[in-house]
Amino acid sequence: MHELAIAESVVSTVLERTSGRVRVVRLRVGRMSGVVPDALMFCFELAAAGTSLESATLEIEEEVGRAHCRDCDSDFTMRDAFLLCDCGSADVELLSGRELQVTSVEVA
Image (tube, rainbow, N blue to C red; front, side, top):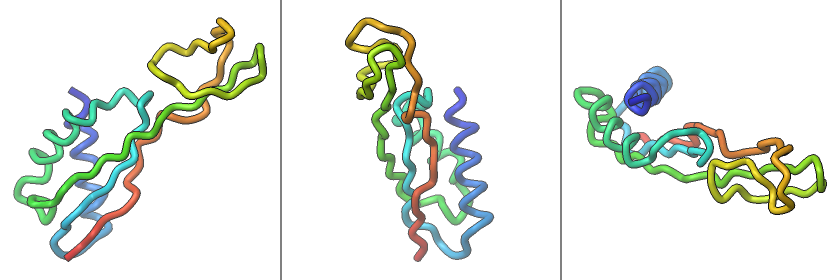
């Protein structure tokens, strides 16, 4: 489960950059990142135990994937993990959806 490693990294990063009790951590997670939000929330609780993030809330904003078709020169929203344009072409470039960013932190 790579969500545990991600949660540990988020906790470590927030601890390095804050002091005091952390109340909220906000993340932006792209749908194409391969991260399962529910699993990440569960792992965050485990990784935060015994730290100043122990009672913090993890808020996850899912970022929709966007892609560009090189054949028909159109941009489109990714509905799932299949990189296939409505025109039928698989010659597409993923523009967004792989994000995994801490967007903000609230400290008490």
